[in-house]
Amino acid sequence: MTLFKVPLILVFAFIVSLSYSQHSFDVVRSFSFSANVDFFEVDQIGNIYCVNKNEIIKVSPKGIILYRYSNMTYGTITELDVNNSLRPLVFYKEQSKIVVLDNTLSAQDNFINLAELNLYNTQTIANSNLDNGVWLYDLDFKQIVKVNTKLEVIQESGNLAVLLNKENLLPNCLIEKNGRLYMGTKNDGVLIFDLYCSYLQSLNIKEAKNLQINEEYLIVCNESTLCSYNSISHEEIHLNFPKKYLAVKKFKNSFIALNEDAVTFDVLIEASP
Image 1 (cartoon, helix red, strand yellow):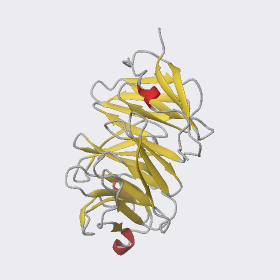
Image 2 (tube, rainbow, N blue to C red; image 1 turned 180 degrees about the horizontal axis):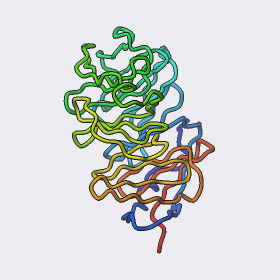
Image 3 (tube, rainbow, N blue to C red; image 1 turned 45 degrees about the vertical axis):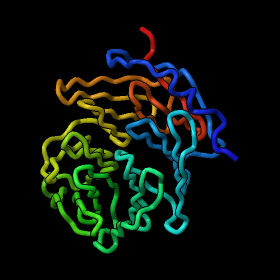
Image 4 (spheres, helix red, strand yellow; image 1 turned 45 degrees about the horizontal axis):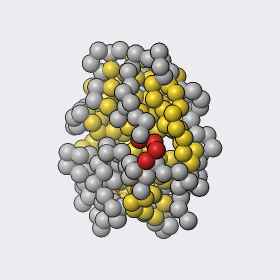
């Protein structure tokens, strides 16, 4: 039985230009799944990756199911990084393992066992497009670490609790973009580092869990609101979604939002003035 009730091609027919000068969104289309979606990601060409426990389903922008991946041995998928659609990373936190996929969601031989590096308490991971390394944050050592597929540590930040005087630092996402490493945190906003793990600056954006980087814009979606921060002009704009969502992802000039029922998606565009 197919997972989808409504073809996703309907979603992308309504994408229009988004202006950050407005303050609300309209729901222009909805579509549903026949099974719960724990979380989802959207890559740079519009493919949607739906995660349900230990399974990933990759869907094209035209609504065609392309590929599936599952691994019952490692348990529930904790995190999925698709910033490089040719090299998605699947993180199994409880097993301290990262599986490297290709664009067909086929597992590669070079999976990463973090336990071999004594990194048993990795909180979050991110792909590095610079050298195919993997960024991660370890709660025990309280530092950013970059490893390669040969299980070699190639960058370390040192203890950030000491260096930044943030004893309760709790990162919830990492993103490498525009020659920078962005760390979204629960209580300390967004911390920005260079690619050598040197701290550059902080942005006071609260609850930066669903952080996305779009050119100079940092976008954080939290339930019913969106915060857009321009890293060049330092302008900060808050927009209101029509209701609460479990997660919202930006794709080009529209937003795809997962409802609280975990099966229905809304497509959002800028509301008319």
